[in-house]
Image (cartoon, rainbow, N blue to C red; front, side, top):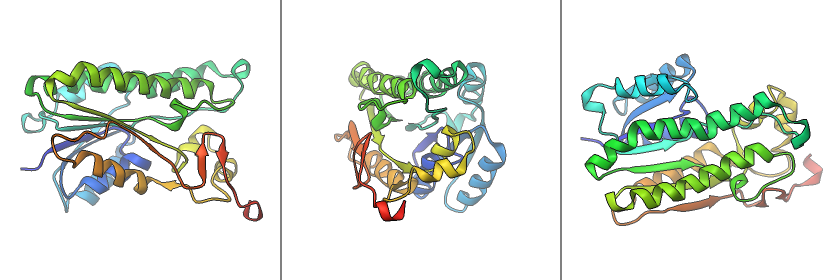
Length: 253
């Protein structure tokens, strides 16, 4: 029987690519807000594996617990949790920032991760088995101008990951974080509230990471032997040396 992996934010980007990368070796629980996308991805992957879909927003605490608690008994022993759901909203100096944007980032990037983990990790502790991968960001360790609250939320994910690793160590549970740099997904389109021209400009002049690049690394991390935990991994495109240091071909911008 295959192990079970639960992926949040599975309808696009790194979450979707991770589901596709893991389908041959894992049963999958795909979580996301957009039911039509969840169903389409489940249909795509069901030729390779068994799939459950859970349609909820990680910000909704009651819905998170209701959906995860409502899984069929055969699906409750989750082996791998990939806390991928996350977003950036806006790019503003602190004094010009939107409270709504701030709350969305804190609610999704941090509180949503907490809710999903709280719903799943106690069972891992009981079984003394499991692997948690939190999707952080270079922004969590290298703050950049106008990134203030987004960077703070990802810094919190970094600190939380280290705390979880310490608290869960005695139970044999692996806790890992991957911190991607610039990845070309829907991230910038969401940040700039649908402004595709501005979003595309972020990735011009260099080769960014793809969601598939990140998913391949996640797959490698969770398929290491039991005694190996890749605990903390920074993944950058070759052109990027820091949050604000990206070498771009000016001729192509």
